[in-house]
Image (cartoon, rainbow, N blue to C red; front, side):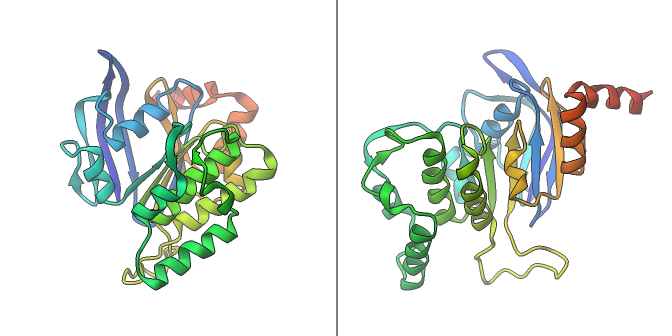
Length: 255
């Protein structure tokens, strides 16, 4: 699904990402840990194709297709979907207006949309301007709902647990799991795979991972991926020893 090879990225002539390698197979969900300012959001925005993030070396592949020359719209058409850490407020545009652009027009699709509106209590947002006057948790709900309906093959989430109170976090987790559920019935995965889409979840606290199964975690520090492994084990070690643990571990492995 997603393959990143030797990726170097500059922002305003400063190198931020250095030799990043990352692979997420079809049907797997990976976590990306790292302190604030480590480069997690830069990596995500680079994958999406935001022009201010300049790739100076390396490649990004989606289903073995190099996407570096594609604009954001073309990457979305390939099945890449993003939930930003803080989506913008858009006055004059209601949530239902965006929903009308992306929802399926067939009866089965409309029934699914209505079910999701009720299941995740979205109706109260439909006639409101996008993210206008909403709490952090409500913004995440609104953003994830649009992503859920568009059903991306690769779901990218930037700090989905940031600014969300514990009561809403479980609901956010439920929406993410629904978004990850593979609803393309023509697709047939091997029996040893979960029937779900691929995903990359960037998180500082890992609180959201109490509600979502991830197959692997990667740790990014100073624009480099320092190590990878089991998400729960890595986060336990980070909580106990801090992110310096990963740097020291990497140094030992290179000796």
